[in-house]
Length: 171
Image (cartoon, rainbow, N blue to C red; front, side, top):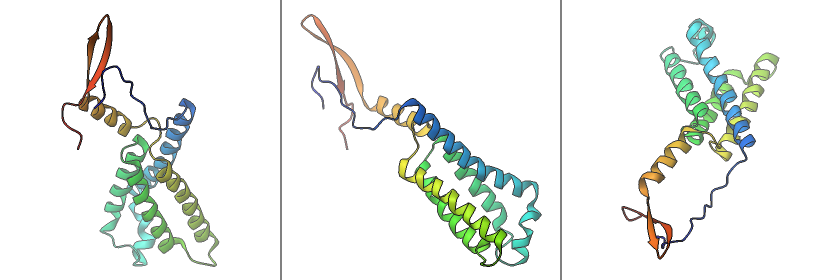
């Protein structure tokens, strides 16, 4: 809905390149924790046996936990639906850690609980700041924007200006 010769102004907040790289590195580190945890369960499913024996976790949930952690972690690492994935992982991590690790008097279990709580802080930061500068979602959004707008050169006297037309009305 722009007129010929008008310039577009972006209201998006852009990150400096270094901040975008740091944000991406943080996403990869957080995601790799969950990938490592899931791979550890695949390599030694009996490692989860202590919780299965206690009756806390049903055996059929082991493989669904592994699949959920892997999918959510990969999604965070590549920046695809980062806020949703981080939110789901934060809920999952808090409650699973509370149920399995929060046992006052057991220093190892409480240490594991606080480690998971600290990791939850990182997930909350991802929820609040989103995917960052380098992500699959950014690539998909740019492609969607390019498909929605048609930029054509328009001759205005002796000057060529560019006009943006929306092929379909905005909804």
